Length: 117
Length: 178
Image (spheres, one colour):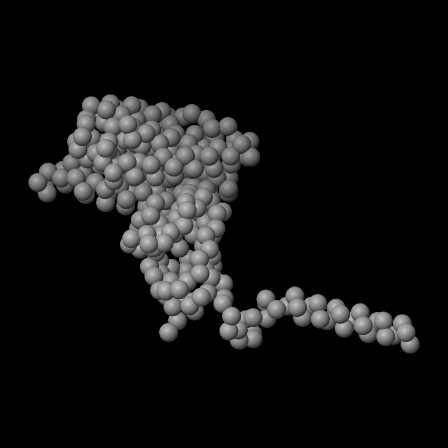
């Protein structure tokens, strides 16, 4: 009987741990009110997606997967901007407002982050 | 004035094509090997680094200097990646007629650019950059990529095309300011 209780306890613990680990992946099925994280890939001289729609307070991560350095700069005045992102470098920013941005090193690379209405 | 500018643009393009295309045509009957393609790729990038370094020495124009810095940084980056890939694949870049033609073109262009100063230099540098990148894009697309055997080397060349096309656009925009 004691052994049975121990097995039940272990199973229960494993279930709790798995439920905890699953929190991240279940966010796609359970509606979350917390900030989300989105990714923009920089590759082949383009930001992908070139238009990203997010909620205020969400975090956007830009990953430079291109073969040369880029940056992420508010268009047109660089009111906010990343450091130079060498290949595989990452820039993270919490989005508070809609804005267009560009690569100031290669100025015709442009994209937009929009806030959901 | 507009006509004059247009003729200068055509002159720059013509010069670049004269320097670059004959070598490609001459070798069109004899496809380049991967070691030869590696040599052409590294040389073409190094030449633009050299032009950029000359611009930093000679120009005081902020737009020219910023463009030159970008060219130096981007093309050095490509050289590093091409060299690393060649080493990993045990490919030793092999000098060939196309490499030599590129180097001859560089010598002639350097002579022309070094003889100029001030705005005349800035204008000539920007026009040469537009023409040079346009010629290189053509050669990469129609000769180097089709003739490359190794998939990784081909992939690197394919990934460089959007960058070179972007450089061409930047150079044309820069040249239009003079």
